[in-house]
Each structure stands twice: as C-alpha cells, then as structure tokens.
Image (cartoon, rainbow, N blue to C red):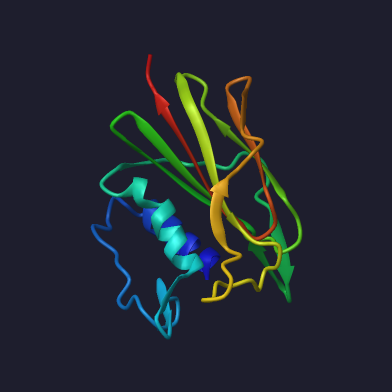
Length: 176
C-alpha cells in the first residue's frame, strides 16, 4: 500500500502545473486506509506514513526530476514496468525528494545531482520492512519510518541506496 501511495503522489507532482488538489476520499477502515481500528487500538498504516513523509511537498513548488541513464525495469509477462519512481519540490529554501524502489528483491543506488546549489543538513527517512507483505497491526508495527543511514554528499551528488520495496524522502536546505 505504501508504494502504491508513493507512486500516485509522484504522478500528482509530475502534473502539478495542472493539478490543484488531490486527497484521499476515506481514511479509516477502508482499502488504502490511513488508519485502521482494532478494538480500542488505532493502527497507523504504511499509507499513513507515506502521507506524513510527503508533507513537505504541500504548497511547495514542483522541481523537475530527470533520470539519467536507463530507468530500472522489471519484466512482468510481456510488459516491462519501471521499478523507480520519484518527485521533488522546494519551499522556503528547503528541498524534499521522494523516492520509491518498487523492485521486490533488489536494492537501488540513487544519486541526486545537486551541483550548482549549496546543500546544507541533508537527511533521509526510510519506510521499509523486511518482508514485502509486512503490514501494521495493533500487535506489531513492522512498517515504520526511520532514519536512512548511508546518505552522503560526494562530487555534487547526494548518494544513497534504497532497499528493496522501499520508500524514502531526502530533505536538505539550499542557499549560501
């Protein structure tokens, strides 16, 4: 569910010049729910975490995101489906980049070209679980955002590795 939500957000961001607003119609105890109830317990779903991690895109200016080289794909039947999705925006001197690795088995190395801009305090958050079928329940929450280790700036590029079936955000301040 988290990856479905992230890919849809990226599509919305790519069409930000025409799309004014998007929202989720129902939020509790439905398909693609943000919150599930189990007795007295409220369970924050992976979809909830994708929405929360994308908050920085709200009221921001969309930035173009181009993939250099070959976009990773996975063959499904006779179709080749892209296994990477991303979007970027800027607001108040801060940049937020959202990245999804849709490959269920392979990690993905990502380089974000930031040459020409001073980058300050880059951080990355990751939403992933060991099992692609993992989901949160009242008893266990295996799909939780956490800091993503391994983000580093080298030669004008922010570099990181996305684990299989994961969603991440990278944020940093720009300016002098």
